[in-house]
Length: 136
Image (cartoon, rainbow, N blue to C red; front, side):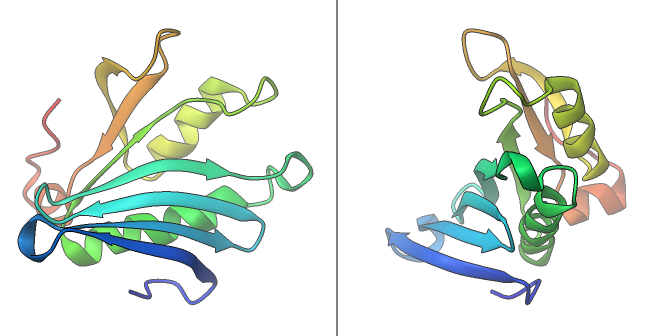
C-alpha cells in the first residue's frame, strides 16, 4: 500500500483472514496523524481520525493525510466513511465539513454522536464513474 510516498505507516494490525479481513492503520503525513481501517468484507475504508497540531493547521497537513487515504480507497475501489467531529474546541465544524467535501465526502443524514456531528461518506471510484453515489 503506497498511494503517496510522503505518508509513513506507524502501525498496522490485521484482524481476520480472507475477504472478511480488516486492517487497522495508524499513519503519519508530515505533521498530520491519521487512523483508519480497511474493511475488505464491507469494501470500506473507515477513517477514525485525522489529527493536526494547532500550530500546523491551515498548511495542508490534513489534506495530505486525506489524499493518501482517499487514494487508497480509490485503488481498492472501496467507499470511504468518516465522522466530521472536531477533536478540540478550536476546530471549526463548518470548515472541517468543507474540507471533507473537497475530497468528495457527502453527509449521510446520520449523526455520529449526541451533539449531532455528521457522518460522511465518499463513493467508491466505480460509483463515482457511474454516478451512482453512496447510499445515504
